[in-house]
Every structure is written in structure tokens, then in C-alpha cells.
Amino acid sequence: MLALLASGSSRSSSNNKLAESENSAQNSNNMSWGTELWDQNENLAIHTNRGIDALDKFANFLRDRVAIETEYAGKLRRLVKNYQPKKKEEEDNEFTSVQAFRNLLKEVGDLAGQREVVSESLQLQIIAGVTLLSKTLREDRKKCLSDGATLQQNLTAQLSSLDRAKRNYEKAYRDSEKAVDSYKRADMDLNLSRAEVERYKNVMTTKIQQSDDAKNEYANQLQKTNNLQQQHFSMLLPAVLNRLQELDEKRTRGFREFIVGAADVESSVAPIIARCMEGIVKAGESINEKEDTFKVIERYQSGFTPPRDIPFEDLSKCDPDSVQDSHYSNSTSNHLTIRGTMSANKLKKRVGIFNIFGSNKEDFSDLPPNQRRKKLQAKIAELTQNIAQETKARDGLMKMKIVYEANSSLGNPMTVEGQLNESEHKLEKLKVDLKKYQGFLEKASQMPTATSSPQATRNQLQNGHRTSRHSNGSADDHHDDGDDQPDDAGSLSRSDSEDNVAQIQNGHNNNNNGSSASPESGLGTSHTSLPGSGQGSANENAIGEDTYYETEVETLNPVGKCRALYPFEASSEGSIPMSEGEELQVIEIDQGDGWTRVRRENNSNGWDEGFVPTSYIECTLYA
Image 1: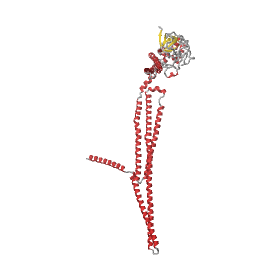
Image 2 (image 1 turned 90 degrees about the vertical axis):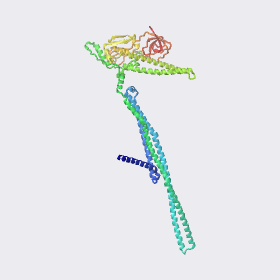
Image 3 (image 1 turned 90 degrees about the horizontal axis):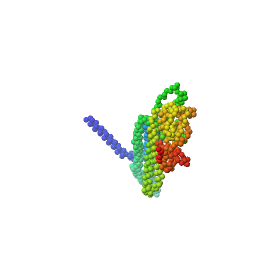
Image 4 (image 1 turned 135 degrees about the horizontal axis):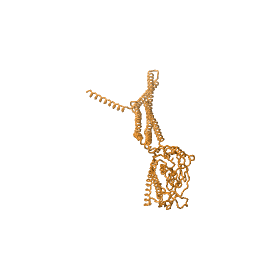
């Protein structure tokens, strides 16, 4: 029972509050400045001016905020730009931490863009609206105050007229009273003549008439004043005050809408900012330390095994000269390292005596085996993609030529012929390069896995063995007696870095160190004396420097003949031009690099030997 009474009382109290709020709302709607504040014109003018000033203050606040937002967005973009990875750091993009940082920079850039959106929206939507509203309100307020001042001036003028009419009436009334008194005294005075009494009577009559006229004027002005005053305070002034009330309510309503609009501008970009935050979190969660560790191993793994133990050298059982050479070899080999490691940058490129077999390392033979294979695979993938693109371009040109041939009004097919030939030659060159790098990769894949590093291998050179490669491909082992002779015919034959590595692993030293397999690298062969090989003394050649030897060129016997299928222009050093149908002698067959070494039968043009693309010739080898 008590619970029912309590619930009933609570419902009745809530209903009472609701009724009170509705009554107050109705009362506020019925209340107006014109009726309630009819005598507060000056205070209302001050209040409306302060309200517009508050609106202008809000506009200034928004301008300052827009400036801050713009500056913040600009600094964010500048920060992102300053921390963008440099071109030299692009090779680190494969690491998840670097990728995450790049994604972070992207998301921060998007955040800067959203701050710019907020700044622009506040500037175009809110600040422009506030400025326009403030200007309109000031103009309307000025007009309202001007109209109110005019009404007040009219009322004041009417009150002045009433006051003047009242004063005139009072004076005329007093004058008429005096004239009546004067006539009464003159009429009772027996000494005055009848003419003088008549004069007093005329004056009295005139004054009474003037008093009546002043009274009528006063009554008329009083009626006008009352009518104007009633109209002023019941209609004219309330209308002006109500206009001020509407103006102030418009300002207040605009204030509310602009504040809500500014919040809506911020809220509109909140989902995008939230997605940016999610992107940053996702970027951070994408970092995988194990994957980065694996990529570091994959990048820098050379494929070599650590060096074996250094054998003990019994000085009592060794020749003093060999001991000295061995000591020199051990002390200097520590300064040499695998190409591709940290000290590889200090190694110089060796250029042959004819500048044809220079070490341009297009086969990446200066890298460790694993790194070399990766580089070759990347190069092959790049060439394959280029061939696919060039094939599409050529097919498009061919279709265009067919269309032009079918309908000459669309175009001249000869205009496409030159582009088609250029595309064919470019495609042929790409295929030649692809075949060349596929040969490099095949040789790199066929190389036996190194079981020791070059440092350990050089320690094995203390036995005094080395290999000289001749033009016929034979390898002669001979002991180092301190007076090695340079190779002869081997200086003009193509050398492969794979042979050098394989022979070094067998304890031999290959003097033919040219690693290029393309004609651009030159015809000469560079020779480098390894420390301890007996070729020169330690005082003559510093450690790490290249030593060049001049050799006599031995004329090689042709292994066949060939005929040029297409004309070829020599565009690089080591290659020779040929015309279509020209017959040449084959000196050295294609070693998998896409080039064949030939000799011109007629030396009248000054060329004797060089390289031409294998795909440009038709070869017939001797039995």
C-alpha cells in the first residue's frame, strides 16, 4: 500500500514538473520585450551590443583555432616529408619494421589531411556564417535603434507642443481674469465715461476669447499627446523592442547552431581519424622480428662456411724460403675478404690491357654465390617483364599496321614500319640479354658449393700450386719458384668467374681473372698476383693493388664460319659491325652470354676481330 502511495506521489510530482515546464514555456513564448521591457530601451541597446560582441569574439576564437589547425597540419606534413626514406634506404623496404614506419608516415600524412579538412570546413562554413550573421545583426540593430530614436523624438516633440499650449492657455486665462476684474471695476466706477467702460468691456471680451482659444489649443494638443503616447507605448515602441528581441534571439540561435556545426565538422573527420589510428596500430602489429631476422640472413648470407683450423707449421721441416713466403701469404690474406662483404668497397676494378675484358661485373661475379644468384634472378625477372611489355607494344603496332593496310584512309602503314623495326630490334636485344643472364644463372647454379671461405682457401695456396689457363682450355699445374710467367694465348679468351672460384677451391690460382662475358667488357685480360704466389716481390706490389702484365696476342684458329642474317651496328667497345649477308670466321662460340667472337675475312676497314650477337648470325662449325 505504501509502495502504491509512493509511486502515485512520484508520478504526480513528475506530472506537476512537466506542467510547470510547459507553463513556463508558454509564458516565455507570451512574454516579449515590447510589453515587459517597454521602459528599458537603453539597457536593451546595451544588451544587444554585448551579444553581438560575444558573437564576434566566438568568430575570433574560430579564426585562431583555424590558424592552429593549419599550422599543425603543415608541421605534420613537413614532419612526414622529413622522415620519408631516402633513395639510398630503399633496399631496406623489405623489412617489416621499415614497412611499418612507412605506413605510419602515410597514416600521419592522412591525419594532417584531416586537420586541413577541419581547418577549411571551419573557415568556409562556420567562420563565414558567423561573420555574415554578425554583420547582419549590427545593421538590423542600428536600424532598430534609429527607428526607436525617431519615435522617441516624435513623442518628445509632441510633449513639448503640449507644454507650450498649456503655458499659453495659462497666460491667456490669467489675462482674461484680469480683463474681467478691470471691466467690473470700471463698470462700478461712476467717474468713468460710458466710452471708457465700453473699452474695458471690449478688452475683456478679447481676452476671454483668447483664453478660450488657448484652452481649445491646449485640449487639442493634450488629446494628440495622449493618442501619440498611447500609440508609442502600445504599438510603435513595442514593435521596435520586439525587433530587437528577434535580433537577439537570432544571434543566440545562430550561436547555438555554429557551436554545434563546429562540433559536427570535427565529428565528420573522426571516423577517418579513427581509421588512421587503426592503420597505425595495424602497422605496428605487422612488425615481425623473426621475419626481419630471416631477411637479414637472406640478404647477407654468402654461402661460404667458416675457415677451418690453421695447420701447425713445423719450421724445422720447412725450407726457409718457403717459410718466408708462407708467412707472407698468411699475414696478407687476412686483408682480403669476400666481395660483397664490408671491405668489398675498397676493392678496385681491374681493367685488361685491351680494355675489352674489363671487370664491369655484369654477371655479379664479385658477389658471394647466394647473393649472385639472387641478383641474377632479379635481373632475369626484370628482363622478362620488359620483354612482355615490349611484345605487347610490338603486337599493337602490328595490328595498327594491318588496319592501315586494310584501310589506307585511317593512316599510312609506312609510318608504323619504323616504330615496328625499332621495337623488333629492342625486343631482340632484350631476348639476347635474357639469354645471357639465364646462362649466368645456370653457371652460378652449377657451381659447387663452397666449403671454405676465400681466406681459408688462400691459406691452402702455401703449397705453391697455381693454374694457368690457355686458349685450348687445358690447365697446367706447376710449382711456384718465384719466377712466374704471364699467360700467353689465354689473354684473349673469355674467362669466367666460376672457373676461378672452382680452381681456387682446388688449391689453385687462376691468373685469368676477367669475369665479364660480354663484348662490352673488352678483349684484354687483367692479371692479379695473389700474395705468396711468387709473382713479383712484396716490395713491388702493395697488398690489394692490381698488377697488369703485357702479353703477346696469339692468333686463334677459326672453329667455323658464319653468315650475317641482319645488319648490326657496333654500339659498344669490343663489338664489330657487320652487314646483312656478310661471311665471317668464328673464333670463339657463344659461351651462354649471347655473343659470338668472329673475325672479318677482309681487313680493309680496319676491324679484325670482335663480338656480334649470336641471334644475328647463322653459324657452321668445322668438324
